[in-house]
Image (cartoon, rainbow, N blue to C red; front, side, top):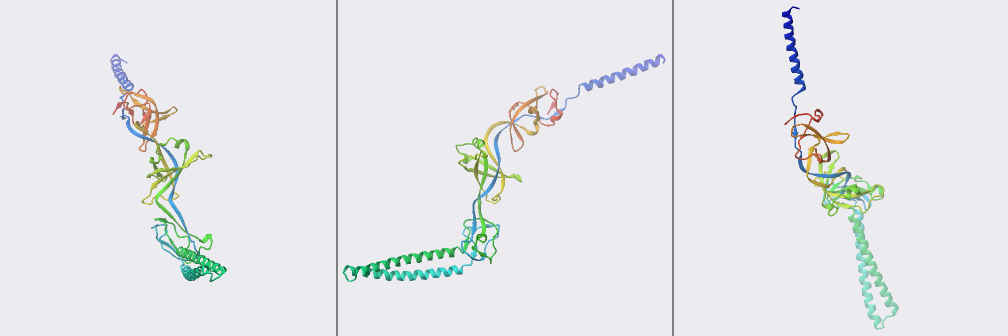
Length: 364
């Protein structure tokens, strides 16, 4: 290699070495990444208990045949609402109308006999004073009058019973509510046995009862001065966004020894008939409210063996690892921070997997 070539080679090598040095320098000092940050917020959070429960109609009545006879007809659409006093079933009434007519005739007969016995007794009472009749005749007249009074009262009772039996031939709705299907079709004999007496079931469902079992320790955390004013949320287990509000109105007077729970009842309005008797639901019972609680989105909080943590950003834009104690999760995904962060702090909102303690960032 001649001297000129050596000089050229050395010059090229120097340029390459200088370029490598610049590249290495750039790799050692990368540009700070842009990271989204935010300040924790303040809001009121509510602590709740959740329990399974079931719904029951405010009143349930099994309609049965109280007299025997052929079922003439029914007058409702199965599964629909019926009005209080509406005729639902008609049992063959003619035999019971005949019994009422017989009872009315018997009453009239006994009434006539009573009038005669009373008049006879009054005459005998005057005659015995004048010694016109014997004492025995007077006592007989008195006995006949007493028997006539008893026979008349018995006839009236039989007439009343006959009228009641006749009224049972027409089965009416005891209240406004939803009715089940008819258990027996028209033309069948009813009321002769237990298996042919049930006609239908009617549910008073404009208000519904909610029953659930609550741990006694949990129940004691509820406001004890006015628990009835406590709003309880009912959630459809198949559609949690569908909710109803109820208020507590009863608790059992004893604690179940086997489960350590008490039975609690709440009442809910059901104007649209969406709540059904026997429906299983989730019950959300609030027991504590924390005003001005510090909250951070649940997605911005990480989890490790030590519990929950967040990445805070210091004033010089350095990432800092901070273990936090968390509280309740709100329905919109915000988590209460009991300690470890304040509203003055800045936290990394997302992409926690790309963040490391001590790294410099460009917050936005």
